[in-house]
Image (cartoon, rainbow over all chains, first blue to last red; front, side, top):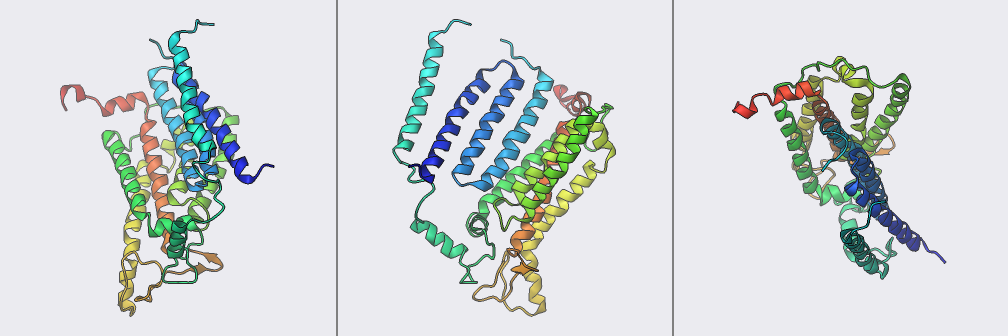
Length: 87
Length: 274
């Protein structure tokens, strides 16, 4: 029988596991716009984890800053330096 | 399909190792039950000292435990966070001091009409959520900074969707935003001094930053206005912090979104030393 605590643990584990591929893809992606989107995806799962860890006030500021502002500033930077990473 | 190298395998193995090392202790219960089934003794102490409705000398009059504990114990964190945030904004503005308040040279028209209408509707929603978070800071999670950060997303998408040109023509100018930010910061600095004014109307002893009635002081901010718990000064701090954060973020965004021609003007001549 699943209790509430088990459910919280399972959701935490799933969000943590899904955030790892998102982080890896953000690092290895050559298309920087895609990297920003993966990074925002990872932030979304982290926000969910903060919510499950009962820090709703952190969630509110984390969503706005790490998904809104971070992505905006990075996309602006990418617009100035070029979209594809070459090396 | 590119051929798999040894370093890729090591990379994946290290990731899996890190996941296992973090997941095993968690699964074995190192964090304890989530959510906790009992209140720990330290939590009881904190709640007794901040959230104690039966003892008005300790009660912050904020019916939300997080706001109550921030007010009584973690206020210094918030003070330094705010100081770092405003220093960063001031640094960003100083970097662009030569072109601040100027109109951009580009005459953009923004995105298509469909995107503009949809954004106009959702912007109202963003502002309302931000305002609700700011004004209900003493009742619900979040407060001035959180609500301000939410509401500041609106000017960001406004610049992207409606173009810089419209922002330059609107009343959302550099001078107005700076005025709002300075007034809000001055109010944050002055609110803790309000109890001193009350000395003139007959109170014998008050404290700076005093919120509710204390054992040796009768001065108190209103606990309830009409039927809403106000949290005394907490509501005012939330309001002005929210205004300051919205205007500061908008200033930073407006500065960052200057076109390349304008941004270059700001750093002209730095390579030869002036």
